Length: 281
Length: 314
Ligand SMILES: [Zn+2]
Image 1 (cartoon, protein in one colour):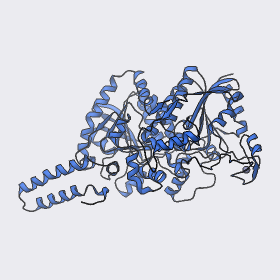
Image 2: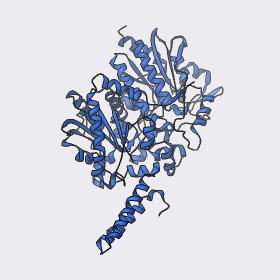
Image 3: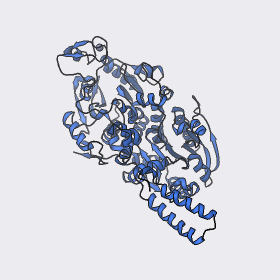
Image 4: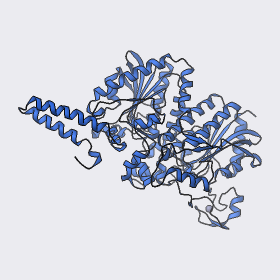
């Protein structure tokens, strides 16, 4: 599940990663060009030189998708209780405290209701900065509540995935969130309501093997890493170097797992267009 | 006794050897009897105090009964079927139809190999997408003909390979989770060996979930967890303990319904006995579930998984 994290393990909050670094100028991870920070921000956090998509945090994602950047957060009072009293080199509850202070108390997902192109929807946006976007009981509960709310109110659901997979520190409880959310999605589908899964870099492990791959529509951002097992685990298994582009969004589309690849600037209009198709509006 | 915790079986093996040697010679029957008593006592002592890592080794024991063994001991008229009708037949998952105490049913399970050749054919019990898709195809047939489903879980995980990724390993598992949640027939799951992450869960959504006493169930292998969080694969024993993967812990966390006892020296010491101990649990589960009418059955299954998880409300 969380195999992928072998490569990109849940980062301590000091992470550099690909969130936009502080400062006036930013170095693009892809084309290595120094680009003016403001210019990147105005371009949906996409490199104006090469189109590289910098990672968005959950709030930036919600701002990008919701009309007037207006939304109401749902189930924001749910916190992890460290059910296993887990300790590796550090206590899980201490790690949680650090992430809550630096990233926020929403754990690895923010769920919110609002409008896209005037249509009422619920969006769950995953937060990679919170323990690698890993899915434990809180992520599972918040997304399940979001799905159930959509069923009650007959609204479409959008989940923006960005996660290394299940959270090891909650053991089997994390694994079961896959089944719990998938069961709720079965009901959403039964109710005839749209579910659009947006896959961003990275979407791997237990998140891919549950809700991220259960959309009526799978929309990926360009070059997003999407897979079940992590590239390093696969390399260790087959004892070969993986080809360029393996497990990237384009690779998945070629293999029939993704409906379309959409640049960030087009994401909101594309989602809006499909919602109107599916809702016959 | 060895200081290596993975050699916990040594006193048992030594005693057995001693008994065998004495039995072959002209030993005093009373002496042998005394040793037998000692063996029983030592075995019980060792197996009731296994650490999570030792249980992991027991769950992976090469002589542990596998799905086809349980089928042989517990079912009649077993007839295997093959293929996902899309790409291939995956030998890491077996699927077919049989009778359980006379009742026609579908049976699905991970299958490991016993010798090198079998292990390769079975891909070490690690399914590819076609395995999960075959499993779903048979489960949907069971639903069509209103037959209960028995699944046996025993895999270290879904196979992490290039072809598996190309053919949608994640999608195959995800679809099984969604579809199994809504199948309109009883599903009885037995975690008999290794319950290894998504590869296990892909056939483990059900109405009654049983777990053998020394089986494990885990979000990631202890070695994998150790490599990531301890940055050291040799910390696997620590990871096994921290992740709470034993039957007792998994039951306490509300994931499995019942723990099925194993013979005193573990399922591998006496596979037929292990199957015999499992049988009444399967019978009771089937009996109970057949009384549940639709849509109650599916509703109860939803609630069962809906409850899973532990969090606090601020
Ligand atoms: Zn660039």
